[in-house]
Length: 127
Image 1 (cartoon, helix red, strand yellow):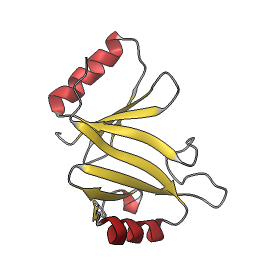
Image 2 (tube, one colour):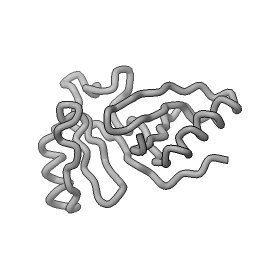
Image 3 (tube, one colour):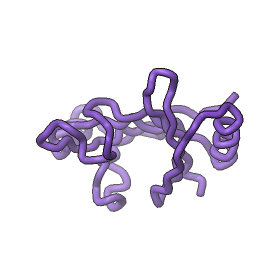
Image 4 (tube, one colour):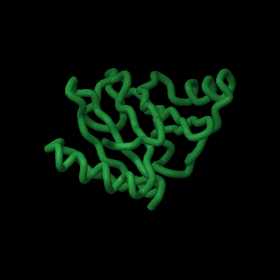
């Protein structure tokens, strides 16, 4: 069984990224983090170790990033330490669950789908 530290972030597609950044800052008191990374997309709004990743929607209703995803909730990300990240990959392989790896500069992530097709991420900041 995998051991998660908690939810790292929830990715949302938003109509107006600047408006959403301001709203989450002013209404919920979230702070913007990692603004200098990835050209500001997504905008990371956080409190403690929990974050929202705000992706802008294009005018056609699709999100700007990542390709192939639909508007709405994009994925749920769980945070683990480096050992947990390595164990997660081994566990998924053992269970025959396909996943992809991505290096996001400040974090490393693996992505896979649950039985209903929801996209899940396991991420670590321990590089």
